[in-house]
Image 1: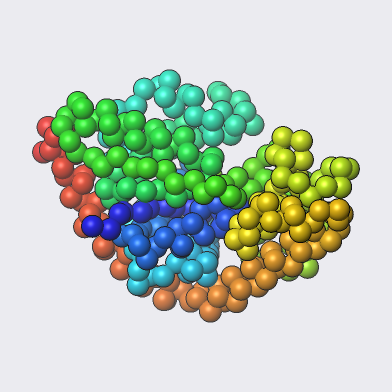
Image 2: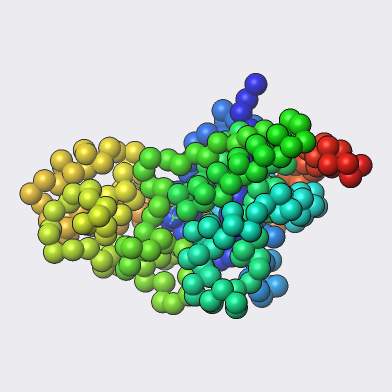
Length: 329
Ligand code: ATP
Ligand code: MG
């Protein structure tokens, strides 16, 4: 039996190099070996208010970007979360299995609520992990490839599924998180103490978007914040900027970090950054060429409609099973 793999991205802006290296690339590498689902997490995008037209554009963009990054709709079920209504009900059920303290300790909530202050923060930001729990459990998922920032939410899913099974009898499959050893947290190039986010406001000088103009991407890498040690050494604590660039290069090329360090022994940052910029631009160029090939609204619509049909079948079964054990039907 093939393992079930599932992941998703919020259509909350243009996808970044962090989204690709931390989540999508790992999914694409494993899609053949698994029964694979990838979704556009549009319900998660409305955890804070969005311009409706922009949201629609982001959704379409996200589907085309999945294909451009190598997601194969013949091997993977690609769908939009809001097309499968079972997500809402399952999320609702799982919210009621969760303790306030469990959500209150989620670091993503702590980080994001700091900006608005707890009283002003949208409740969606507080409860979205339980929607994510529902997203994962609906498909009997075994493995969830995500970036490091989402690890805690997948672990919460496992805890809640285990608790539910103990209380009501064996209902849900317990999922494992998959965090790749390299590139699981790509940092902002201008502030290498923060994660690179697609929805950051500001000048975006530290963020590389997958659709970014190649000259602009090159400039961002060449002016990435580093230190004055001038040693290409992987040391996340003392050299976070340079370590981030080493991770980016290692993840794109599959070269071992130690081998990169060795090649750059006694050499300065200029030459190293140039290689990182070259490899990033090669990758973006390939993705952008594919994107333009796949970005046809009719074809994309056909793919997600077909995906929603297939996804709904499994989602319905799991939801009904959980409603039965709860005494709801
Ligand atoms: P947002 O700012 O809207 O939260 P995001 O860039 O964090 O955007 P998400 O849609 O929240 O993107 O996450 C999609 C996937 O990409 C998740 O698996 C997440 O862990 C991964 N991911 C996001 N940012 C990074 C990053 N900088 N490095 C590695 N993985 C990342
Ligand atoms: Mg995020």
